[in-house]
Length: 44
Image 1: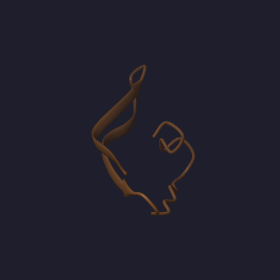
Image 2: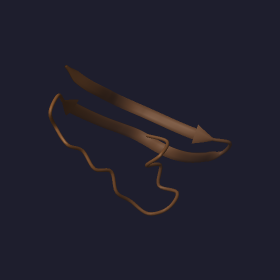
Image 3: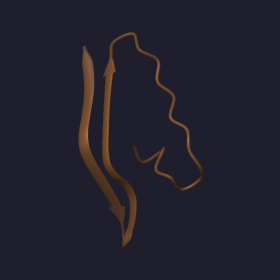
C-alpha cells in the first residue's frame, strides 16, 4: 500500500498555506512533518 500526494495547493482566503506539495509514503515508512507555526503541517 502507498500514499501519493502530488502537486497539492491549499489556500485559505487569500493566504497560500501549502503550494505545490508532493509526498510519497510507502507502507511501513515513518514520516515526520516539521515547520514553523502557520506553515501548513496540519493542513497537509
